[in-house]
Length: 280
Image 1 (cartoon, helix red, strand yellow):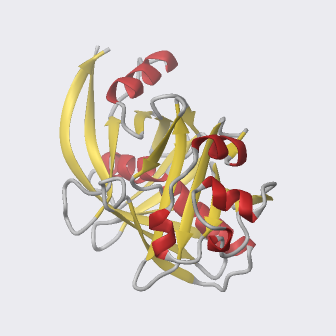
Image 2 (cartoon, one colour):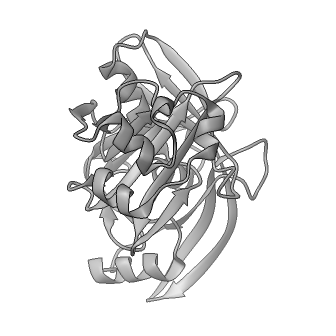
Image 3 (cartoon, one colour):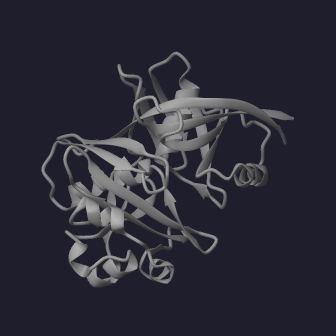
């Protein structure tokens, strides 16, 4: 059968068609089995590929695959898929493995998701010195309390003192595998962030097939940063604009909002770059 897909860039900046994080969306995945979905995601080799299916609980059921495995939730696939599923509508609900995720389009055309789950956090076993060495920074670069956080998918959130230090980070693969490994994800990662004016600076590193890669824009980690903010007693409400992806050659912009009740929202602009079809 022939399966249509779209390439959508998410968390784009000021209409730049080649900014943001790319995503492939298969608009109607009925008939595709798990093995073929995984094979297609590996073939396209983007951060994530999504497959849209019918749902009895929402506007669509969405499955998210990286080139190596399926994810229960991820930010830029949620926003990019919503922009495809919605058509002329300004609000859709997507059924993910992590739960139901409402997504709405704002007056500016950007899409906003509400985090799939309330944040769950756990302590980090490594010392601050260990974590600093893991990302190639001095111990004093760790600015606050690192924590594991999940609002649908777990990540290691590490506060860094200055944006310049975030930009200077150089992960050490062996140490990332040791201190940044998540059994829940079966991979290692680190999300670094530092406040700044007018925008915060963030980077997300992860391992794949033994290599350390950098994600251009990570909506799930943005949501988890909101969870970290709540868990560490940050004042609410919070609104922050995040810059990510410059070092990866894909500048991206994300907005994080945590309201007075603790609800976490992530916003980003999307641009459809092209369409195609694959025989599978």
